[in-house]
Image (cartoon, rainbow, N blue to C red; front, side):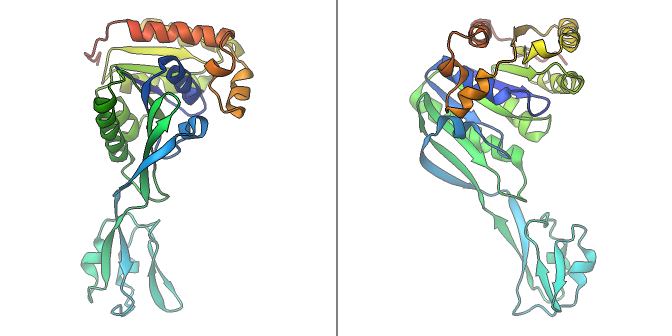
Length: 295
């Protein structure tokens, strides 16, 4: 079973809830799909066994031995990735988008396109099984493709270990890496918060999730901080037939748990929030999945 935990915005507590599910699963392949800002490894501290480079694209470099400093590339570059310094043309690999226009127009063939290979995928053991995550290097692109690579490797591990459970901590938002996270998953858990932006982003992410699966669930985190907005979220979920499997109270112990390098299930297993998460996990994993999209 694959459970993807996503949210329409950052800061909803998605990673904390994902980590709690990992604790409840006990033996799992855990995948941090937020390659732009992976953080699950900070909590679980895996022992890294393998690193793989990810080729995200290409960027331009200038051959100073043959460049005549005509400036044509600088004039045509729409991304300001080529600039002049002390009368010499230079390239900025972070600003470069790899469009290859400069490579094509250079009259002296002095520009070469080289692969971006600074992004890394990590995999290793941790206290609940295996973990796979990635770090997209600054300025590099194709985060959706990178997530797909990470998931494929996680599936390879799952085939070997046969844990029967894979938990994916998705990135925030509704972009390509979120879609790569949701593709072919068995369950999607949407984490939201009782704010106006929380409701708005819940509506956006719901449209994305329901393109991939009908086995979608909602958790309202910190629900007691704004009962009026929590009520609006409940109403939205009711209209759209999205089961709210948990309304979690605000609990400072969640922060204390992270400070101590533990999930809330490890730090305060008898707390109200832990009890509600256990029930949510039971519902999510016990119900029969319906993969047919609603949209």
